[in-house]
Length: 220
Image (cartoon, rainbow, N blue to C red):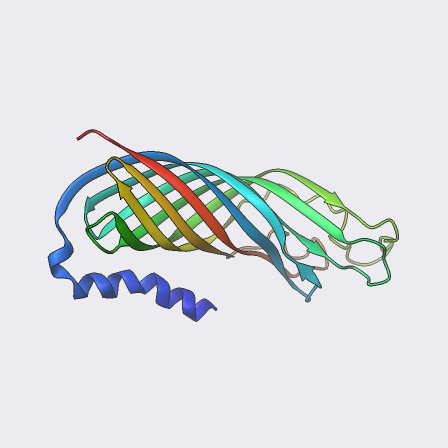
């Protein structure tokens, strides 16, 4: 999967080199709003029986293009993420943890075409700051009294999270209005829980979902 992401991130550079006549200079600034749904999970070491948790995101966005081919998009979001885990198959319920984040995302965007419908790819880093967290613990669970603690019921200290997001979809240009629809993939680079605090030696976010944005051009 990591190799695939590297190929996708390098694809805009390759395609732009193949289309030297597509760099018409423009000056297009847009502001907008967006909504996304993503199936989040956390990859743990040692492995855990984890299932995705659906979370929503709401964002304010900014797009700027100075040519027809490449531009950038920035988003400031309120995002919900987390995971569902089966601690023991004999338990009546599952463990669930949801964290709310304020998240900054900076994307480099590559679009193709000059008409109203423009396929596009974008990718870039994100930085998330946790705001609050809630969890549901099965009533049958009993915390260990000795050794390194589990992360169930563990109050995770404030810890920013960062990684990459990539999206593949299209822009629909309707005059000053741009409607953007894409599928997105998220991969975290740092651990949610500091190594040594619990039994989890790694705990990194991942997610896949969709995003809808609407942008309005300002100026001419």
